[in-house]
Length: 290
Image 1 (tube, one colour):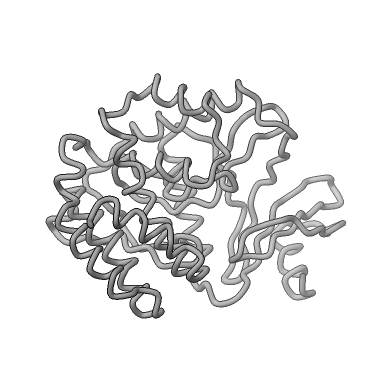
Image 2 (spheres, one colour; image 1 turned 45 degrees about the horizontal axis):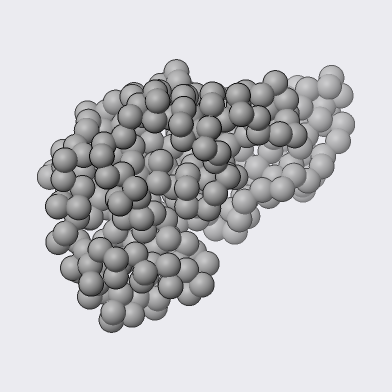
């Protein structure tokens, strides 16, 4: 941490910072644990690179999740153009069955918190990629249109700009876009508040066994899109899924639709990290659109 930021934080917190230690974090920000002379502890994220607006988006996302009253999220202590200071959550060392059951139930309750239309009041970020949350008039009221336009087409346009979209990928995506309404027909629901990027690195179980959600990419959408992300990279137990589905049963055929929703995140990973994700993208496109 540079001396200027340390000085600013000490003025905001009204006491000296006793120690600063590194914490493992994501690709967007450097993470630090701050301990004050009084013994208070905070989590500091410092901007890395050029992700302008990342902390503004994170703050608003956390506030939207908190507003639902269904899940635990860290409190935002203060924010500047180059930092975000959060409540420190002391992580436990295990993800017990009871903790995962609680997380599953709370995630289901989050999805019962409804909005009037699909999308969000502003665009935000998915990792370090822009996330388009302002739909067309039709997309604001029709999930299949929103998902096709603001998720699949938007990420595909980024892939074209970055040179990752081969002719095969573009042709398959054109075919898939036409099929999206039929593929998700019969699953219509009112817009649910979604975390937007819930993988194993974006939740914590504290030392009491209580789950917390972090690093959201919120919007109002179909809950199947949120649940599909949890299974893409693992880290969620059968107990989690059983608790979720018991609290909020899924429409028949969810397993067949799950890869369709994972495609959005794989496109995002393609755009963020390169061609290592191209094979998975093409595999899903061929499954639905060939």
